[in-house]
Length: 469
Image 1 (cartoon, rainbow, N blue to C red):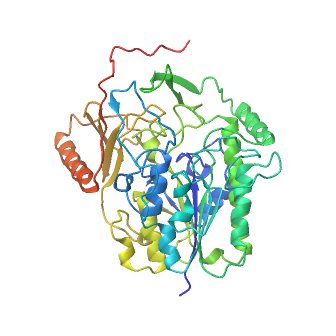
Image 2: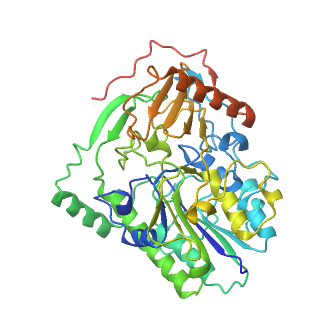
C-alpha cells in the first residue's frame, strides 16, 4: 500500500473560535471552512500547553511537555518574573539532543521531511536539521517575526523577498514549491505559520474590509476591551480582556491566512497528491485575549493564551484524509497534541518500537468513526504567563476538569460538559472528585518527572500595581 503524504499545518496563537466554521461571526474563512467540510472537525481538541514552544516539542515527540522538559516558550534571553510569589521552574530551551521526532522517524520510513516556517525550539545548534528534517525554510530561534510580516523579514533561514512581500504569502509559496517539486518519496511537510502571532499586521486593503464590516455589525472597538487584575509579573500592566471579536487587523490576518490555505489545497489537488495526503490543521495554544493588545476573544471559553483555563488550551483541529475520513464528520472525543506523532507512525506503517516512551494515542480509530476509550489528559505549566496566568497543572477526565494552582495549592473543579465557560467552581461540593483527580495528577507528575516552581524569597506582598490612568 502506498504510504500517505502528511501535511501538518500548525498555526501560532489561533483560538478555537477564530474560524467561521467553529463559531466566529466576524472572521471569514471560506477555504478553511471547505477543508472542514471535506474532513473531520474535532470539537474538543487541546494543545499540550497554553504557550507555544512546549506544544511544538510535544507535537514532534509525541510526549507531554513535562516529559520532554520544554515547559515554557523558549526565551533566548533571561526572563525572570522577580515580582511574583514563585520563581518559575527551570526548563530546557531546546528538544533534547537525540530525541526521536516525527521527522526522524518518518525519514526512517522513507519520507522526504520538510520544515517551513516557525521553529522556536532552540538556537542554531538545535534547528530542524538536527531533528530529522532534510529542509528548513524559515525556521529559527524566533517566536515571532521580530521585524514584522512585511519583507525585509530579517529571518536568516529565509531569504528576504521583494520589499513589502507578506510573510504568510511567502511561507505558503515555499510550501507549494516543495509539494510541486516532483519528489517521488512520500513527504512529511511541517508547515508552521508565524500567523497569527503578534505583531498584528496585515495588508491595508484587508484591514479596511474588516473595519467596514465592524462598522456594519456595530462593533465598538473601545467597548470590546475591559481592564482586569494586575499581571503578576508585570510593571504596572493589567490584564485587558477582549469581550468580542472585533479587531480588524487580526481579522485581516486570518483572512489572508485563509486565502493561503486555499492556494495550498489547490496546489495539492493540482499535484495529484490530494487523495493520498493526510492534512491536519491546528494551533499551538489558545487565542491571545488578555494582553499584548488582546487581538481576539475566545468566549465562551474562559481566558486565553498563557492561562490554564479552556481558552488557553482549546484549539481548532481539522483532519482531512479522503481515504479514511468521512467528509463533514465531527468528533467530540477529547484529543491533544501528543496524539499526532503516533497517528503519523500508524499511517506510515512504522514499527511499534518508535512509539516507546510516547504519551499520545493514534487518532486513526476516531478518524474512522470508532472510539479510543476514556483517558485522562494532562497539562503542566509551572510558569507565569505573560498574559496573566499563574503556575499550575490540570487534568481532564470525562466531564470533569481539575486545576491545581501552585501559588497557594488551591484546586478548582469544573464540570466542563455543563459549564464550558468554567464559571462555577464546584470543588467545595465534590471533595471526593477533587481528591481522585488530584491524586491522578500527582501520580502523573511524578511519572513524567515534572519540575516545579519554588518560593520567591524576595517577593514583597505589599507591592501594589497602580491602576491604569
